[in-house]
Length: 93
Image (cartoon, rainbow, N blue to C red):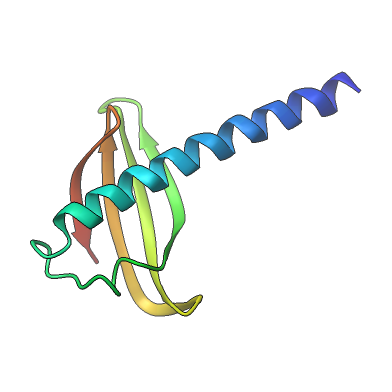
């Protein structure tokens, strides 16, 4: 029973952490979308496809995928770097 409880707590914390970073990225996109050449429709529907982090630089790298009406758009993947709860770079693959 203890193992199940510990796993549950771990997943809740991970979920909350991912959600806060999604909100952080969304706020950045809302604020800088036009500067990045994006429309409000471009930044309204996206998901975090994967995440990686670097212990040497303390940068979390998120690969986000654009969607349209919930359907992922092929090749519409961007990467976002987050360090110390701040978006420091948004790139387009």
